[in-house]
Length: 255
Image (cartoon, rainbow, N blue to C red; front, top):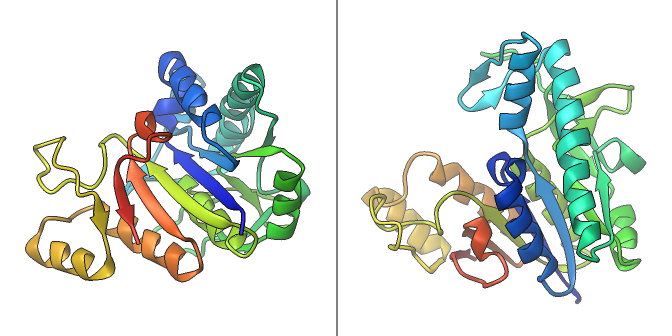
C-alpha cells in the first residue's frame, strides 16, 4: 500500500510568518503523498476583536454564533488557508485549499445542545475519502481548513484535530497513513518540566501505565485516546511532535 503522511498543525505556527515559512519548507521536504490540516484560532480571535466581536471559549473550544461563524470562515477558509497554499506553490508543491463543503468532502451535523450551546459547531459524520484519494493520486496536496458543512447550506466550525483524525481514518483504506499531530512540545514528556524527556514510543499497555502513574495527564490523555481511535480505524501510526521536527521522524510514536 502506498504511504501517506497527514500533518496537523495548530494556528500559532501558521499565523506567524517565520514559523509558517519554516513549516512549509519542512512539509515540502516530506516524501510521497501528504495532506496538511491547519487551525487558525488566534487569528480568528484577533480579527473578531478588531471588529468588536467578543470571543467565548469553553474548555478550549470556541462558541460559534452567527457573527463568529463569519469570522472563522474568513480566517480559516480564506486568509490562513490561502496563505499556506500560496506558500506551498512557491515551493513547487501543488497544494489545493479545501473546506469540508468543497466537493462535499466532509459532512457534519450541528453539535446538539447539552450543557453548552456551542452554536454553529459541527461533529463530523461522513468523509468522502474516495474523492480525496483521487485528488492525491493526481499529485494534488490537499490543505484542509477546519470548516465542514451539513449539506443543508450551512458551514460549521469544526475542531482541526477532529478534521485530521477523521480524514486519516477515512484515507486508511486507500493508503498506509501516518498521522502527525504537532504541538508546542517535542513529544509526550516523561517529566512535564523537562522538554528533553520525550517518550519515544507508547503502546497501549504503556499508555495505561503512564496514565495510572500520572506521567500522562490533563489534555494529553484525550490526544492519545484520539490517536488510538485512529489506529483502531486502520491508521498505521500516530506521531506527536513539534512542527519543526516533522520531516525528521522525531517525537513520540503511538502504536
